Structures are given as C-alpha cells and as structure tokens.
Image 1 (tube, chains in turn brown, green):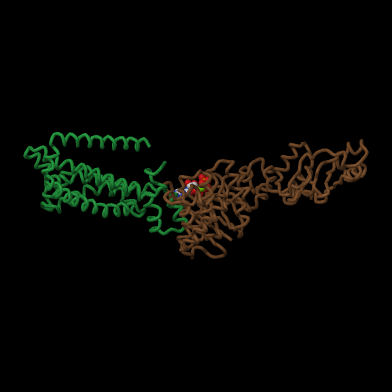
Image 2: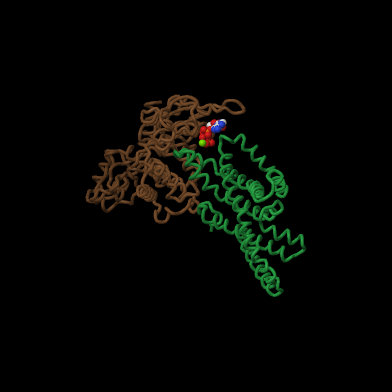
Length: 373
Length: 244
Ligand SMILES: Nc1ncnc2c1ncn2[C@@H]1O[C@H](COP(=O)(O)OP(=O)(O)OP(=O)(O)O)[C@@H](O)[C@H]1O
Ligand SMILES: [Mg+2]
C-alpha cells in the first residue's frame, strides 16, 4: 500500500516559486495499479519522484505499507522500489544481463542468483536469454529495449513500482502488445504500481484507480469507470473526452452484462417448439446448440413460422459470437459488423453461457448514471 | 565510419611511405649513416620515453581525478571558472611553458618533466570533465533512483560511459607530450631533442634525422597503443571503434 499525505512540492525558480504538487493525498491499495493522468506539466512526474525522493518533498508524507518513508534510509528505500524513468534508462555500457542485475548486485546477491533471475525475467517477456543476455542496449530494437527496461525494475522483486510513462516512446501497435504483456505479468506478480500516463485510453486499460491532475492539484481519484461515468468537474470531463461513455465499454466484460439464462434449442427439437420459446421470450431468433452445448447456428422466427420439421434441418450460420472475457467494445463492434442486436456468449470451452443484447448494454451503462448520478 | 575508412587509408599510405623511404635510405647509404648514431638513439629513446611516461603518467594521475572532482555537482559553480583558467593555460606556447619552468626550477629533467606535465594536463582534465558531464542526466537519475550510491554511480555508470572521451584526451595529451619532449633538451632535459637540435646547430642533417625519425615513430607507437587500449577498455556498448 502506498499512501500520500498532503504531499507538496514548491520549486524555487528565478521567476518565483512554482507549485508543482499541491497537497496531494491519496492511497493506493496493495496489488493495484494507480495511473496518474493529466496534461503535460501538471505534476505527475514530480509526485512520482517525491515517493523515491529523487525530488525532496517540500512538505507532506509518503507511507509505504504503513511505514513513514521519511524515517527510512534513502538508498534502502530506493532499492526496495522498482523505478522506470520517463526516458529509456538502460545503461549503454552494460550488457542486458548487467543492466537487469543492477539492483540485485547492489543488494549483494550471489552471481548465480542474479544471473538466473535475469534469464527468468527475459523468458517472462519472451526474449530468448541465450541471444539477449550478452547483448548491449544499442543492439536491441526500441520495443525490446522497452521490455528490458520494464523487467529491470522487477529484478529484485520490489513490492512497489514507480513507472513514468513507460510505454510513452513506443508506437501504438507495439504499445498495445507491451501493455497486454505487462497486465499479464501484473496479474501474477500483484505489485503496487504508480504509473504515469497522459493517455486516457492507456489509463482506462491499465488502471484500477485513476488520479487526474491539473496544475499540481489532484482533481479526482477514483476507478476508471467512475471517472468516465461521473467526472468530478468540467476539467475532468473535458480531459477524458466527449466519447467517455464509449470508453467505458472497454471496462466491462461480456460476462458481466449477459443474460445468464440464454434460450436455445437442440437439433432434434421441432421448429414449432423453437417458435413457442421465441414467442414466450419475445425474441426474433434463437441459438441452436450441439450436444456439447456449443452454439452452431441460429433459427429466426420467420423460418420457424414458415417451415415444418426439425431445428437441425433449418438453421442458418451464426452472425457472431462473444467470448465471456471480451470487453464490450469488442462485442459492440461485432454486433455492428453483423447488424445484429444480440449475440450468444460462450465460455472458454466454447459452451453457450449467456446472451448479450444491445439493450442490455445500454441498460448497464445507464444504470451507473441512474444509481449514482 | 567514413572517418575510420579515411584512417585506414592514412595508415596504409604511411606504411607505403615508410617502405619507400626505407628503400631509398638503404640505396643512398643514408641508412648506414643513420646507424652510426645507433647507440645515441637507443640511449635517447629510453630517456625520451622516460620523460614522456613520467610526465604523461603524472598528468593522467592528476588530470583524471581533477576532471572528476570538477564534474561533481557540488562544484558546478566553480568548475566553469576552473576550466576557463585551464583553457588559458592551453594558449600559452609550450616553449614558453618550458622556459617558465626553467626560470623557476632551474635546468635538468625535473623542470622538463614539470613543463611537459603542465602542457599535457589540460586535454586530460578537459576531456574527463566534459566526458563526465556528457553522460545523460536521465542515466544518472535512473542509477540513483535504483539506489546507487554516488561512488557506485561514478564507477558503474559515469566513468564507463565517459571512458572513450577520457582516453581520447589522454591520447591527445601524450601525442603533444612526445612531440614536445625534444624541446626539453633546450632546458637541460635528456631527450631525442639532443640529436635534433645538435644536428641543426652543426648543420648535420643525418644527425637531425636520427633524432626526428625515432621521435615520429615513438609518437605513432604511443598513439597506436592508446587506440588499442581504448578498443579493449571501453565497453562494447559505448565504443565507437567497435560499432558495426
Ligand atoms: N527542477 C524544477 N525546477 C523548477 N520547476 C520544475 C522543476 N521540475 C518540474 N518543474 C515544474 O513543475 C511542474 C510539473 O512538472 P512535472 O515534471 O511533474 O510535469 P509532468 O506532469 O510530469 O509533465 P509531462 O507529462 O510533460 O511529463 C511543471 O510546471 C514544471 O515546469
Ligand atoms: Mg513527466
């Protein structure tokens, strides 16, 4: 857990004092990612650097796991925090192995231990240790350097990580890939992370909590969904963008919104049975599943009305299918592509577990507004 | 790259020149005449090297730490002034420097070493200082943010990254040093200058050559050795000589 209590930084410059961080108070629970978000110059980096005392705070306190860090030795404090600075900070004079081992060596690990650790970390980001351990940073692509740079901060397994726009310098496509990799790692590692970004989409994707800064002040600190659904003021609303409701789609999984008791028929059932089920539920079509309970097609009300026989003889192909873990943005995109108002939802084994409708989605998004707004 | 290529051609041209000169020297009997000075040359080369290595070595021992000290943030305010003073030092002609050394310390090898040391010190301090300052601030920040002590930062990050520039300074310094050491003869130092200046004085070109050619060869050898040293010592990741 990281707790900031009235953290303030006033820089004395030749043009007078500049307040870069103004009484910032917030608490990041253990294992969560908090994204510090805001326009350039709003004090994100300053706030971050006060935590590992690269910048001494003017006033205020930082607690890590309940301990007041001002009582801790600066060097010990820093070695216990993974730090990823805004520019790529790999040391060009060291091999990748040496770069990754910096903190472990400072902590006095034995060579076998930190070497094994370096290989393990490279494996984690799918870079072959036998190729990369002995290379120098200038022999790596930008994306590879970025990965090394992030895993270097993980080397000594610090419980807390500070990351200053770690993916800022990378092209959008690779950024998505690295973000996904990082989230996958985080799901296992459960670090407490403060992560600076000025990209709202990145924040929505990565964050458990978002802290929005403006001119040194913390404007709002809440979950991404709350920030998007209920921006605290004009500034936050403007910053997250007029399409903020659409952004919320990314935050919700199909499984959370689907109707959990989907209607379906099996191939050996008759069309008239299908028609009865559809009429009872006021549906215009119904999913056909096979004996493994996997959706294999749909039967529309028109077909069931106009034909006689078994469902297995009169079905058409699926318009689309949603995975339980798909986010709503993906689901809605599929619905638009298929020109369909609903989709069957399947679990990881491909079995039908629910159905998701456009109405269900709008209702879900609207519910937050009605209950809290 | 282009620079390296140009250098290779230069070396090649130089070798060719040496070869042709050698053939000519043999044919015309100059070689035989030069070899008459064999004993003097051997003695003086050793003396010359002694002057160079002692004064150059002292310059390295003083210059690098001085450059390091000047580059520390706590001295940032005074460092520029100090560098300006050193820069004024470079503009004083070496001969004048030797003359000054003599007028204070008298004649002999001592003042010669002192004069050469002062002449050699400047490029070393300057390169150490600028090389260390050129290490990107974000690398230093990353290092201290990871919990390096100032000492560890210096040895593990700053010096390795500045080493190429520092060694380039040493190389320049020693080139100046070997080339200036003959002048030491004028203030009573023992060096190949003895053959050169005596040769000039008694109008004996072969004698002059017997001093000049070994001086040139010494300069080339020292330059080459330092190049080799830079190739080996400077980490492959920051070594311009080892980039493909
Ligand atoms: N060393 C310093 N001296 C004086 N002012 C500073 C210093 N460092 C930062 N500032 C000022 O403090 C404010 C906050 O800077 P900070 O680096 O925290 O911004 P940021 O939110 O990280 O911006 P960006 O997204 O561009 O990285 C800025 O107005 C900046 O000019
Ligand atoms: Mg910043």
